[in-house]
Length: 224
Image 1 (cartoon, rainbow, N blue to C red):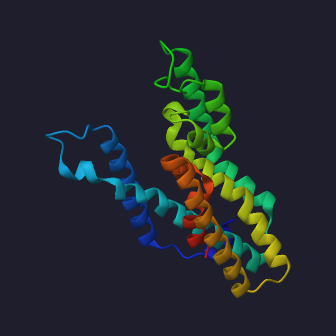
Image 2: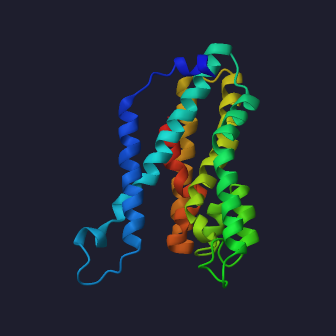
């Protein structure tokens, strides 16, 4: 892994982008707690663009993951899916398990039921969805369906990307696909997901934000 990482130069500017994106996400969620009434700062009532911080994270994730995979391909002439998923598990697994364990404890000690509970109105569903990296699809169907773990929807989108793109990229490179061909595939995929996003939005409205195809264009931009 260290040999692969040395082929990817450290870019301090990316840390700056992460900081900007994180600040935007935090501020946006803060504004959701404020009622739009007299006395609330004007910026807090028009903070929608701050939510783009999530999309920025998706772009950077697509770029980083693809850079690691391409570097491995160039170094060893192959992409090891086993090593890739081992690295992802080590990076995300411990923190996720700790959070899920804490949520279970809080839920068992919670007085009352409903969407305000730590794991929402359906704790088992929320627990399975987040641990199975499909929490975004629960929020797509049920408002507040993940309880306090609502922000884990973005982790679901990321993991679905991890489960598909490395396999697809390895298949393309094994077939000797040129960079032009890969970019053509990405262009078609991006256009397709945009079309699907429009259809989903017209069908279900705002909940389409949590659908994987809606967020996929941002990831594909980073991949490209």
